[in-house]
Length: 315
Image (tube, rainbow, N blue to C red; front, top):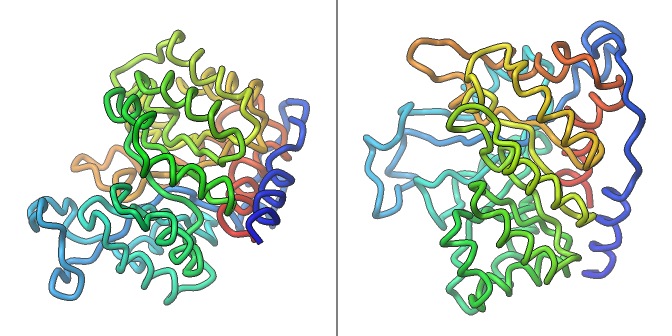
């Protein structure tokens, strides 16, 4: 079973990149594709902290906004043509994935999940396998330089990466740019482990895209099972819609990874919860669907739908 899962994952992400050309957007030319998209990065939580308690290190005032339930999400994503969503376990709950799992079950098959598990536990691999049976397809790891450098000597983290390889489960990395060398080392040690790097590795979070940092992210494309999320546009570069200043970075990633290894996500609720309402859900979809002209229709379809479907909704 494990080897079959790994073979399936390999088959899904090993296709060659399609040639790029300027074509009409999906919204204009492909009615079906523009209304069946996948948002690969959303957090949900409930104000009901009795039913779903927060972790000890958090309090209710940390929940900003105070609520972002699936029902609230649907008011944003359904009008934009999103039919499926990858839920990312919210840090408020730490290792208690109950709310996310209940949402996956209640709204099946709309949701898939990325869980957080305690890597210090000796049964971490068994926990991962149990969660996989409930719709979890990836596991979030926080990857700043210090944390990522410590992975090399962590038995628990290595157990997670091995389980990921055996079961076709992705390591989903909230990475800082300075963690990229350590991530490359892990990818080299575990070349059969699927890896998804969130939010462009947060390159551009402090302003203009740093080409040296981007080159390190591009270099990870040599690992066939490493993918990148083009996501959280509101937080990167000029941080202003229509986010076209991120186009050159997306183009370089397309050229290095191919669109079968790129996927899109909003990072809601943060994409839609700014006090000044400068950002909207539609803004995030529109960048890849309408605003940049170097992607073919097929490439748009891959980033906005097909890659996430293969990685998080298949098998």
